[in-house]
Amino acid sequence: MDNMIFELKNVYFSYLGKFPALNGIDIKIQKGQKISIVGANGSGKSSFLQILDGLIFADSGSVNFYGRELNEKNFNDDKFCRSFRQKVGFVFQNPDVQLFCPTVQEDIVFGPLHLGVEKKLIERRLERLVSILGLQGLLDRIPHQLSIGEKRKVAIASTLIIEPEILILDEPTAGLDPLTTRHIIDLLIDTGASGKTIITATHDLHIVEEISDIVYVFGCEKKIASFGKASCILNDMELLKANNLLHIHSHRHKDTVHVHSHRPSGQGGASSIGLDTHIDHH
Image 1 (cartoon, rainbow, N blue to C red):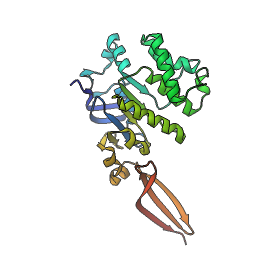
Image 2: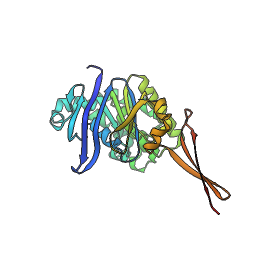
Image 3: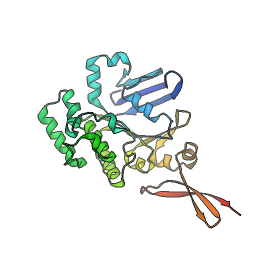
Image 4: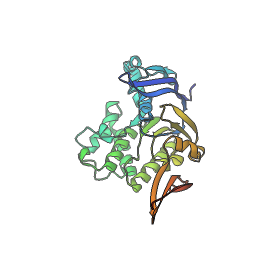
């Protein structure tokens, strides 16, 4: 039980009681695991992460954190709430949700200051994260004037500075340039190597094999369609196709249009899976 962090049993959730988001989720997450959640838009990935972070609560079923149920009653317990927020860090898909202070530095240190961390310790953590994430020169900037990549790095820093045991990230590389994406992947790898539990929802299948031990595929029915090792999931073409996880593009040769489906290769590129459709125009 000590290694079991999250345990969800038959979890259902809907918005306003009429827009289903999760339909019977069963999942166990143990200490130190690196998990990726993949699926098409609307498959319930973000709702699942928010359930784990105690931002929303299941309509039915059970959600346990170290054996204690995540519900509104327990979050009204100041001791439990503080302990949970120290252990679990969440990086939102939209960094603007996390950035609300006048300067970047104030945003980054807000969390540990609020949790009562010693100021000298905060300063040491800040110095380390500024170096790792390349935030030099940004600390006095206004967060909302930053680029999307800079905002995302600041949001990640504001979560990591708390030094949570469990790190939950919603699309951490969405809309980023390749170099910034690489920096974030390397950071996640290093963070995972330190023994932390990392749960990442992503559309970017290219990064999944590097950051995950286990991949869960959320399907259009808003439930878990499959799960397994990253290499097994990424090589299951029928599974990826059925769950809208293949990239499709077309090109033209004279009067013939070729349509190709691609999946990510182990090197982070795209590799054809040999599905060609020829459309002749006469």
